[in-house]
Length: 314
Image 1: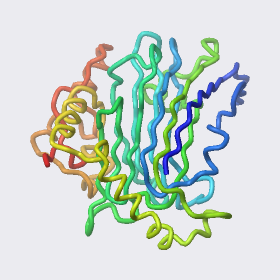
Image 2: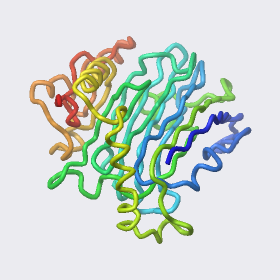
Image 3: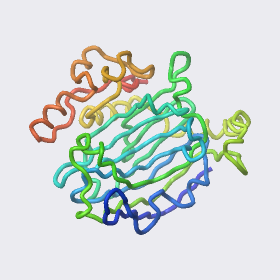
Image 4: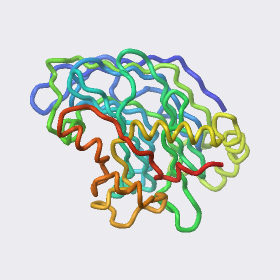
């Protein structure tokens, strides 16, 4: 099934009084009709234009989730866009959760290679039963493989999910770990979403999604998943992986695969390269990025990444 909509969503933060945030315009929870549609895998994308100017502390998100119905065992795939001070570039963060595995965050952060407030850019997530691929303007930027046996297991997102967009105050962490917070004098903040594409197999649930017979529904969607994963845009060719390496080489600021402070033993989907490991601090941040931040100069990563099985050619 393919569902395409030219939907533009304007989300506003109004002036904040104390700890309360008041939003005007469309509901900040997201597209009003989208959360009623849950999918078993698919391609999900939107054209996004982010707020301009001083956006420190602000988080804009385009993501898949089922957290509204599975409180403790939810799945999630995230694009999170992290605001910054005026004159400094936006960051982008991706993350993967499965079965409530929020204690094992799998985030990666990148320096945006363009000004996302000047024009729209397309962000896409391809989700199958075997892998998740994140795309920016059609270029794959991260691939997370489920892997059988000693792979992600229950941490891999497997339950039907819906699409959401949000804009919210992430002052406690979003910009340099909370050093710079949202300043509502620079508001309202507007994020624009359009060209929404949902291409996947709808979950067969006429009532509560929690009552879905997953095995039956997955079997029903098997043919559509094969169609999805064999489509030209979904096949990860050697050329696409080379493009992904180049993008990650230039833009990656942090990868969980080299964060030995959090994970002394790398997560099972990580392919750790001993030489490349030396290019990262023990907390997973690029040494180039850390040093440039200390000198207040914006510099992207220098060495290529080998994490998440992304350096493998076909």
